[in-house]
Length: 117
Image 1 (cartoon, rainbow, N blue to C red):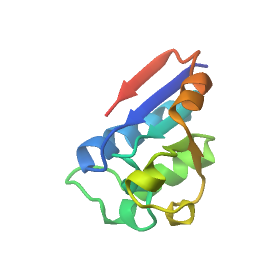
Image 2: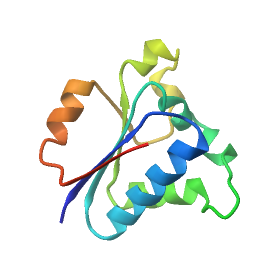
Image 3: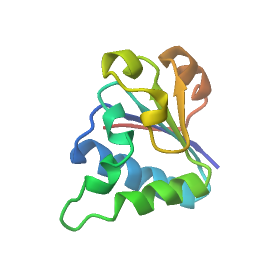
């Protein structure tokens, strides 16, 4: 089992779909998965946003999100997003953790696979 760390730098479909597709696929293969949303990616995890995001030929993001959560994947938002994007903790979808970048790097220090979108 590997640790897969995915950094999400934007809240657009081009950032979100690959992160959730690879993350849920890795979790389904038994890997430990951590998605870290920088302030730029954090708005995608505000309640109601994943449901709105659609792309031709792509899977449903809510299904990927739910599958990732069921399989133990972690969704971490950089705590800087709270002030940088004026988002409150309660605005995020269920299961989101808040963490600083330094703590995130400590959490993934042994990651064998990393991606950034």
